[in-house]
Length: 179
Image (cartoon, rainbow, N blue to C red; front, side, top):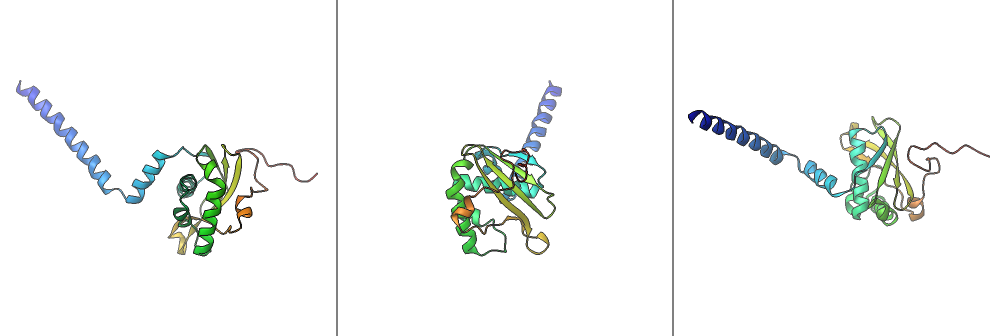
């Protein structure tokens, strides 16, 4: 009987230590990581073609989520430092207006080029059959500000235009050049 009690006590102690470790991790996790986990759970998964870096993938997901949510201010806060706040806000408004409906459905992100400092991403919005190119880069001195998106499309027509060079479908081939 004493042996069973010791085994049960030991098992309970191990479970309590394991649970407290998980709790301590949860409490010590960065707020940004917690928000990211919440966003990830609340949105459709992003389909991926190509080779993103961890940072370019995360930023692309967040851009699509902000489009889906209609969060212009949060989207504008992801802009590179080479444009003004006015340009970022106007671009965010244009992108939300043009792509919000598509961003609420399935989206494929096709990553072009290597992602050590910058990357071009083509977003394919399945629901609306729209295509959008975004340009990402590390921002700040030596990339210290992390991955950001170029947001200088203040003209609504320019902001909604698909890229002329991208394949019509994710993973597709480029159209033949010339007649």
